[in-house]
Image (cartoon, rainbow, N blue to C red):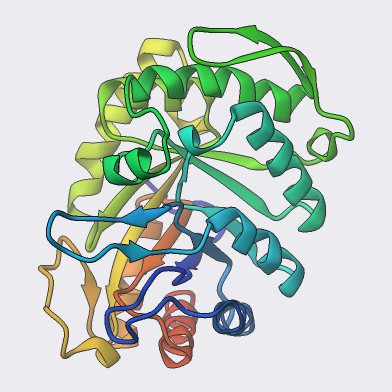
Length: 305
């Protein structure tokens, strides 16, 4: 696949959970500073995870801020970077209300939202907050039948097994003028089928060098064929793990799981993704500091020179 005429976008996941080194979550002031630093450094987007807690048997609970509240605040704190969820666990919120929230955030951000959606996977947080963990793919399917038409058309009339939105409307409807990009993350056949049917973009993660991308995209192409969709109308986004020199003391991951080395080394990896037609890279690092944000900005500039 040849490089798109539109430059590949590159963004960074903001830290909003407890940090192993700091032994606390970052404050909102710290998150805001990193987001503004990312915008100044030339990043195209900032992203947040959607979790409620992390819990393993015999280990302390690990906390995280609620992502939607953080993202709404960052919409006001920034001016032009896109704002994405990587990805929302749809069962955490009523799907019609989620569409209303997305439409409102699209208004606050002046059209900068990328609405990343997923089915959820981390059972302990579902259990702790009293959220059903059964039939996740079926629940996600029904939720999409509510969220997508509400955002794209402003109304829906749907009654399903798990969700209903009878004669529901979005008023006001900011998305009528600029609907947020709907991104779906998935790798299993049913999730790929839903991606092919409903999404503007597909996300696969977490990779290093793009050695596994072709195989994963072939499965998506097959899903598109099953629903009669041209795969070229579905953008590819990739979650990429980066290991800057500042994190050299951390465990070194293999090349297929992380991009590492100098800014030029990582820039070369970015270029390889661009050559494969990827529209957006979403970078994550084990730790994010202002220095790492600046280093990533330099890698992005080198990748485009």
